Length: 140
Image (cartoon, rainbow, N blue to C red; front, side, top):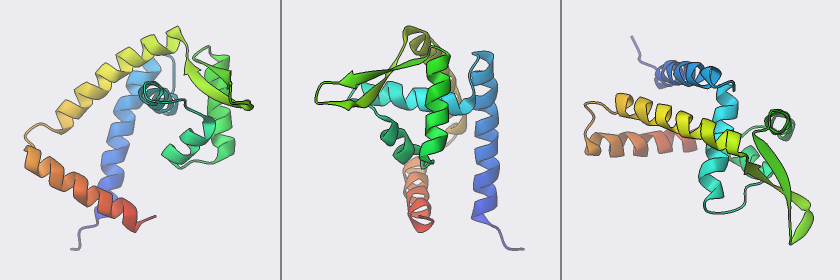
């Protein structure tokens, strides 16, 4: 019987999403909101983050990102701030409430990462990531 890579990737993805969904819901957010907040949190340390960055990073449509951002803003997790160089641009900034949520979620992510990497050597991890990168490029 032929073994399909896609099926295993989907199963693993579903398991990871389920775990993160439970952790996020305990904090009053969705798993998608958690991923977006995580991205803003990490990237904001290096540069300003805009809606377009989220669209590109997660490969999701503008309308979907708009909805996510509006909900995050409504729930007091982000604010949109004008940037000096172009008043039309609005950078996304986490509120203190979001930062506290992110600290907890980051801990959950680290726990899950450690669990997933248990008994995997650094060499195996590096090879896996190389193969995963090739697969991702193949299905662009």
